[in-house]
Length: 330
Image 1 (cartoon, rainbow, N blue to C red):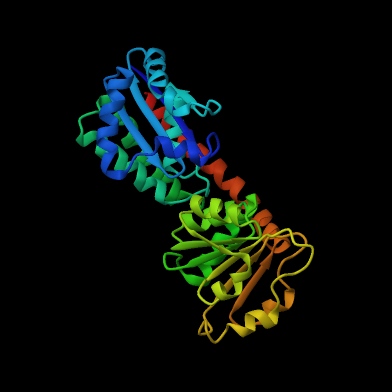
Image 2: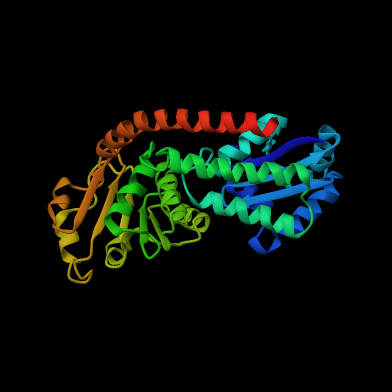
């Protein structure tokens, strides 16, 4: 029996492609059964999250199984570049261990993926689509994921601007599940930062952009809502986090404007992330007692400090994974 993984994720496919392959939690078992039929393989597991869908197969002829699967999925890829990556044998096992450990996530070290993969495996197992090879593989991956999280500090310290912003937000609010986010400007950096906040549980996203159609587009991607750019101050009364990156040649948020809505906000903490160059938010806004203001330089400095620590942790994670793979292959 040969092991193979065919998948697509946030690195290889845009959201409009990923959503075509997304599988709801209640449909994971059924999807694994369908995978058996499509690939003509005796063992199969489908893993599906907002950032990835992966097909794990154990088959006598992995190459033939993958060809069958690619042919069955071809219609969903129509009109886009080939979004799939493929891992065989040991590389497939290593990849699954990295996924479960949070090493392949958009938010490096994230914890949610462990439970999501476990749910996918349990659904496949209950549906009768796993056998000796995939049972052993997934159980080993969960063991590796637990070791990585308990023996390293991979979950601490983010290495990108968006992820640093998320960690700062969590320090301010404790958790993000009840937080509302407003995005001013709809560029790529705004999107990535908002996406990182949503991945950690932010309740909703409101987008304001001078080109309203672009605001609608980004809001739809975040499952949020769009507002007219001129209405941002009214929205400020209710949100907890503001991400600003408008491309304006001058500051657009000033101390007196934030002061004017403090009472309506009941003086709740407000986290302002200014990733625009030149800056969107006047530095004096940070003087307000309950306001936490970070600009691009401050965030980049924090990210750089974290990057050095994180590289050492990734090396430790890889050592654990490699040692466990040797045991698995024995």
